[in-house]
Length: 415
Image 1 (cartoon, rainbow, N blue to C red):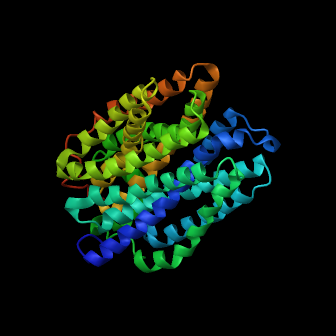
Image 2 (cartoon, one colour; image 1 turned 30 degrees about the vertical axis):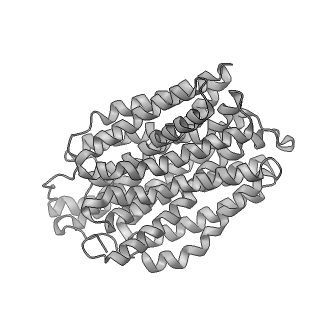
Image 3 (cartoon, rainbow, N blue to C red; image 1 turned 180 degrees about the horizontal axis):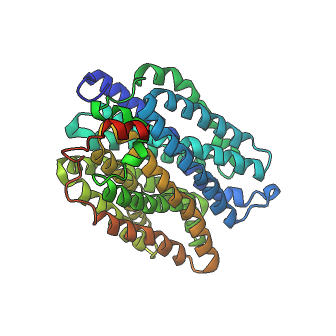
């Protein structure tokens, strides 16, 4: 099924399913940040503020494996089976986090959760792009990725309502529920892989190498750098924003309010910007989100009236989460269908290194400097560097008009 064969009803159903799956992704992404202050104060586990960064990095270590393997599997065998496996895996891992008897086991299941989370993004991104109308691909992708922000809002709201009165592990329990949507995935997601160009069919197993052919090499490397920066920004803010806000003098409830504003800004702002991106301005919009994140985080570090700080938090969320979503949209726009899952999966897999580095980087900075401003300034660094990388991308983001033809002998050898 692709955008030319999917009926409007099928497109809407697939998009709703994608939103639901990424809601799961977003809930788990933000739950560690939501429970961070409560985890630190849980005496039996003996956690410190550095533990939050360590757990964020442990979660992120599993993500490159999930992203790379799932993207390749989606182009090789279709989107459906890898998606089902990822949902079952992440649901079981979230249940393990809710029931973990100690910090060591909790870290292990967070690593397993990272594998599942890493797999879902490229699978859903490729599925949505396959089925969306060509002139609405960014909009459909942003609608789906809004599920990430909504999941983050749900996590923050639940934490606002329950913490610190209930044990923080209860917030991981809802993550085990999504296993019930497996039959829906089996029905709505096609089993067959994307159609192959005849000259390239025999080389299908060499898809990763094709990302570095002359037609794609420059953009592929830039995308890898951009995803690294975007994920360093996203995972550092999602894991550390409440803790940094508490260090700045806000109580736990206020910090969670800022986190909800942060995620809500990402959801609403992404939907507002996507029609502009679909009109040929995807690169400019992506660059703008990185710069917006840097400016908003700088303002957020200064004393401001509470209503203004909530607005600035929303803009920081639009820039931080928005840049990751827009980079993903850029990748789906630049790769043809036969490489879309692989390109997105490998790109996000490389970017997950930034997800590993980001929380640990914030842990080091906040531990090395007493000032609460250090955390906000540290957030800004990957935002500025990400904008610089996006500025180097081609002005027109689209697959090459002509693709290389692989000679039969070479293709056979590669396969």
